[in-house]
Image 1 (cartoon, one colour):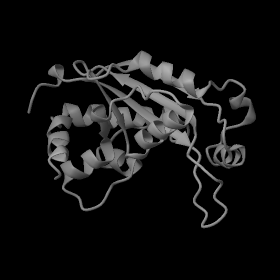
Image 2: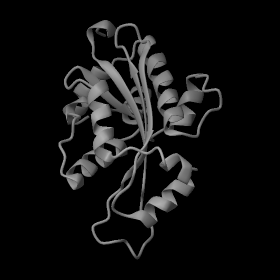
Image 3: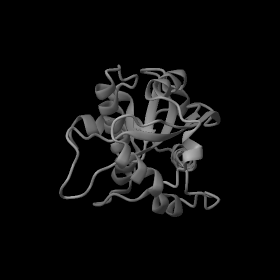
Image 4: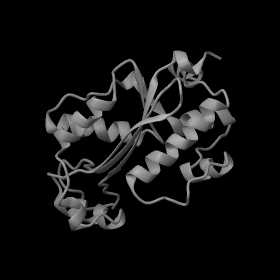
Amino acid sequence: MGSVSEKKDFLVVDLEFTQYTKPQGRPSGFFSEIIEIGAVKIDGGSLETVGLAHHFVRPRFYPRQAREAMEFCMITDEHMESAIEFAEMLEGIRGMYVPGETYFAAWGDADYRVLAQGCRRHGLDNPVLREDYLDMAAWYKWEMGDSYTTGLRKATEEQHIDTGLLWHTAIDDATNTGKLLVRLLADGWDPEDFLTEARLGY
């Protein structure tokens, strides 16, 4: 495996967003709106955390579904008083992510899909290249040789990560995902091995 120091930095992200899962009554044109972002930047060489960001994001299109998601995520009206706009969130991502030089890492594939769709609906350019996206859940499944996808909390337990029992906000989940990432990298896991296989359609 290649040296970690030769590889990209990592922007580990967790997004909370609205969803519609009921069998009927889906609003016309509905899409998931991001209401919270947690992000941790990790230096690819030292594996040290070099940046943190946590923001609530103001939804603009589907207020009822936003309210339901806020209640589920325990986001209060007081939290939303400090919320930023979607475009401002994108600027924050641009400040921590360098295309081609930073992996945009998250647990699962939903975060990239929701980000990309949000950009389309807001009429804004997606700052994140698809080829920089690292689905850590799929990577973990591939490395472990599992036939199923492991949840983030179970993966941290399997790898004996000290999460401090913090599982609440997007920054908590991004931080815990980052801790797991650092452990995997320190153990010699190389995301490029997985991404190469994925591109070949493993």
